[in-house]
Length: 271
Ligand code: SF4
Image (tube, rainbow, N blue to C red; front, side, top):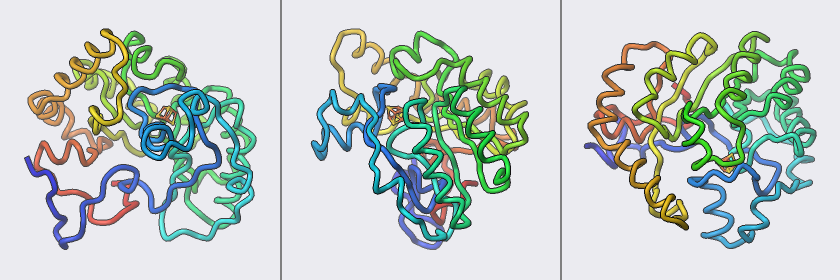
């Protein structure tokens, strides 16, 4: 284990979304997808108490964030990081991406994607496809697991359809398997998705489970125990061994710590 390891130049380790982007952009508060491990919900509802649990489930536009004129950031920017792109907020999300692209930025669009949203994004941003990278979060194939952990997000088949659609529209495509909800199946899932990925597929563990996941039922307690067992070092090391030679596979900091890889040296490298 190498938790807390410094980078070769002695800088603080880069983790979370900083591994992918130099800036995090959002234009809404709240998300109806209901992911049990959601950092943004924990931050807004539990930690800062800005929203009630009921308010969090509604997605509300923050108008000043939509209208903001962005600078050219010194690297790739990620949108969104604290909500998702859903049919209800699609227009304001597209306006925000427009503003980022207008300033010359390279935008990483991250989502548990709805097919109608991805069709619309591809149609709108085809002219900017060289500066837009899709990253779809696909955490498991098992609909039972998705129903427990991400109860109102699109299912596996819809997310895979989005990936295939964007790939066939010649956009750069990538996948985030963070958190890996099903470590028994993740290698097979990676191989199923690879034909539609042009950029990368990132694998990571669920972080800070005891802090962020609300255990409100016996079933949830069992799910948490199974998840923790599934991401023990023996499983992570096996997955690493089986996928380390696949060129598009990337490892999040949570996996790097287990297998002994150095953390990223700078934010936003996305490599
Ligand atoms: S889709 Fe993202 S923002 Fe929405 S609940 Fe899930 S983790 Fe949170």
